[in-house]
Length: 446
Image 1 (spheres, rainbow, N blue to C red):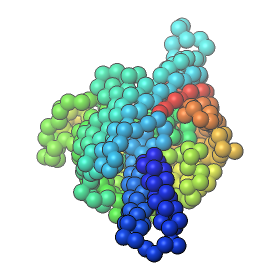
Image 2: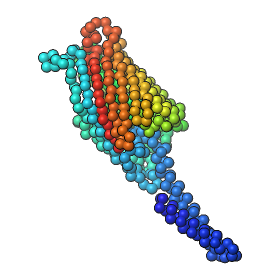
Image 3: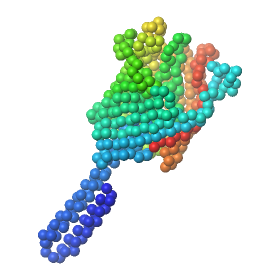
Image 4: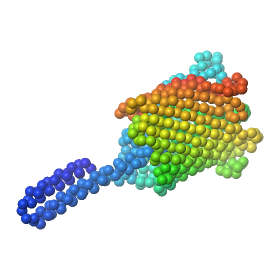
């Protein structure tokens, strides 16, 4: 486009100079023709400029809302994209790699001291994510995303695979393997979280006072197969309504039936409503390229019901409220969530159990490339039928290596216990969770 513009300008200038040089003579028909030709070339150059700028402007407008792709947005400036001249077709290959070095120190409970005398386990190097994928747009209305996580096993290797058809910004339909609309910490773009580890209150399995439990779920719902309707109304109000298998990201097959208890399909029924008062909120908790964005915030309400069949399992209801804000160098996020577990009739347990969790975190960019963060996480892991809870303060330091797309994170987290009636309750409440965790992560993405 620039070459065409320069060529048109040179020709137009030459023709205009010829006309001006002969203005002393009476206007001849050929002079008028030359003037018209020059004007026509100027107009053509202007049209070429507008055509070149249109796809770029479209990409800039799409950047924020497209961050819900989960890894890299379609219009992201990392790496490269293949795009048609009219911007209706986009293909973006991407990669994200995380390597971690983790140190976990556990309390004595649950450890066999004959084989583990130093209380250190599950430590060393790991690759949580080795993602290769493609995202993009077709016909100007269909977004798509497919990626594999080579670091996973089984069905979790296929991390995402979905298409999203937009009737309008307010009415979109997405089908495939995707993020379930619940916790804001999980919906945040992968690799742009403040901490390299999600809050323990979302990822830890709950504790039930029964020996026969086929399912001890966490509060977070994670990845799943399903279908949802979603959109953004008036550039402020977002909604998501979905049906999912409820089997999580490790299952890629149809395994569901009808619930004998509720006589409904044994699926996960999910809904989420958000308000974004200053326009679409980037799904990010820290990106140096967003510090000049101004103030953006989101307030979200989420609920879902996992309707199980007549297995040795539970029907789970979850609800949550979340808030996130980006303002200059500051990043703020806070959430609270609740889960009710009711056993199926086959379990012959009439009692239901309630669990709660919450966290709040604050991040700040010190300079352009350094980000510091604090988080406090709380969980009632043993349910409201017993006293006591887990409390987890954490700190983090992130460094974004300039002009490389490399992010280095270092965090420390402590799990504390308080309010338990007995020492046994205290010992059981953090079973399987490290008391001290230190983690260094190296991340690269394009």
